[in-house]
Image (cartoon, rainbow, N blue to C red; front, side, top):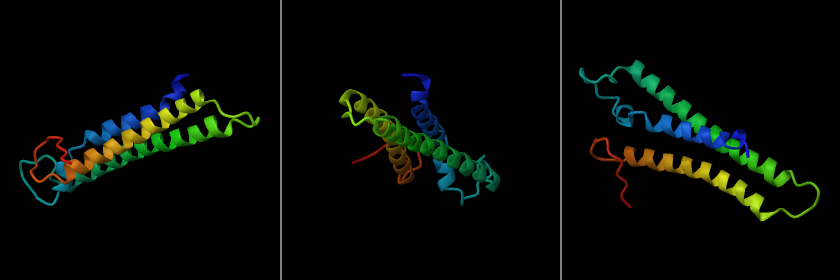
Length: 127
C-alpha cells in the first residue's frame, strides 16, 4: 500500500474538517442583522457558502474517487477468471466504507446542528 491508496480518505477527512469548521449558526441566521456580528453582511455569508460548497465538493470527490478505485482496482482488475481473494477484497471494502462513513457522519453532524433549537455551539444529537 502506498500514499496514493490513502489519498481519497485524506480528501474525505479534509472536506470534513472544512465543513465542520464553518459557523453554521451564522449561515442559518443570516437574515438577522446585528451590528456586533462579524458575519452579518452578505459578503461574508457568500464567502462562507462558497467555503461550504468547496468542503462538500472535496468530501464528495474523496468518496466517489474511493468507489471508482474500488471498482477498478479490486473488481475489474481480475480479468483472468480467478476468483477474488477475500483478503484483498476486504481491504477495498474497508477503504470504501470508511470514506462513506466519514460522509455520513458529516451529514449527521450538519443536521444535528441545523435542527438545534437553542443556538449554542455544542454538538448534541438525541435519538
